[in-house]
Image (cartoon, rainbow, N blue to C red; front, side, top):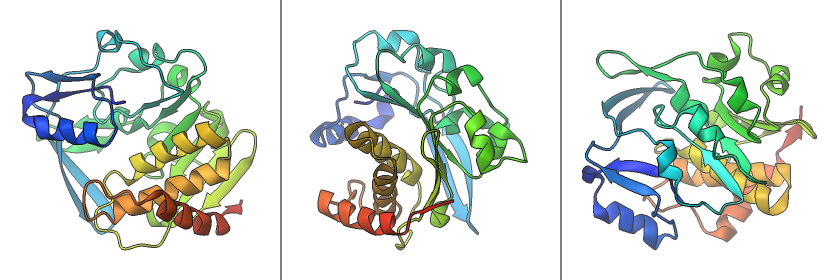
Length: 253
């Protein structure tokens, strides 16, 4: 299920695409504002982004319909959901994940995206899984961000993504591991980190196996980065085969 807001420009066809792939859209609202849109370009291993339109924010009222879920992932792209609103959705025994990328972004007058410092301790101490990229971590922890300092953030599990260098997985209970990325031809890495976080959460809720969940997440990310079509996430067997290979290369650090 997705909780979001889009403009009329998003189009009915995209909503139908989500429905046909088993994603509930009852919490997606269509507003008069245009859908939040980024123009993204990759060069020399870096990424630059410019925002061309911004949709309405997601407010407390947008959660008036009950959400029955064992996991809840907070994934803002441009501050559209406030930390306070996010915290109020943390009910019961939900496993809550966070990708804070949307809280780390600020725009210049031309709409270009720059990284800003951000650290909301109240939110970070309420979540279970934090997914953050190596380029974003200094904005949360400062220039001397280290793996050892991950324990001070608050979450029980941290997924520190490093692109083709794989993921550092830190767990309060199990320690720190290096999970390799699956070698594949990268066509477009946009969304790979989101896929990793989502696949990790689903697998973690179902199995409670930290390293297998991380391997499945990395396998899913490899399909997204090499995608030739929007829905190419690999089959269950393909994901499992890649995850097994990734797990073989996983090491404690």
